[in-house]
Image 1 (cartoon, rainbow, N blue to C red):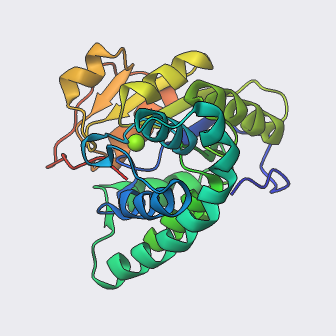
Image 2 (cartoon, rainbow, N blue to C red):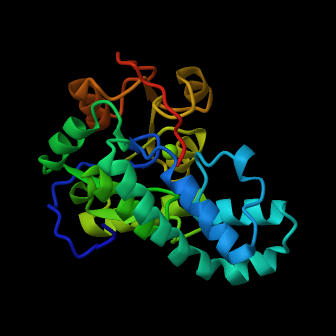
Length: 259
Ligand SMILES: [Mg+2]
């Protein structure tokens, strides 16, 4: 993850950039609990965390919004932000371990089959495009047993602005693939993920396993929307052809979509 020295074939046709929370997995609030502890330790308050929604946001954006919302000057929030991450990661590790041992880390429908199938294809490069800081992303994916699938990534530690992270992911994936002839598909569960696809001229594939329903994701301009990814064949066809607007697939779907 994040290591662009990892070899990739020159035959890549599609670079698939996945969001994490609400798209691949749900951590039953591990991130939220960890960020609360870190904010309280560093700033002395977690602000209005109870009523704050994390989905589609980047980790640094969450810190800035919560702490300026609590009345702290933005410059002060930014000055202390480097202290937040070690505290956050330390707590996150423990929160994930507890949830893992209790079977509370939820892999969303079809994700294991989808990633395993895509990993085996030479014409697909799998990457991450997430608001999580890199180490946080790695820990969540490791807790879910998914870390090995991704060859590149761009993270909340690259930028506070999600569309900027999209540009970094596009560049990193292109540098691995070589000539830039391959298509980009951004896969995510929020309107922000759709906007990321737009920011890099990619195909926006949305999935309603987070907090946003199918209608909302369609309204946000997603090129294809799935209820969930349980129909691996249909999802892969859509990824490879970048077609299938309005495609839906069966399954329960639904979830908190939060960190
Ligand atoms: Mg998400």
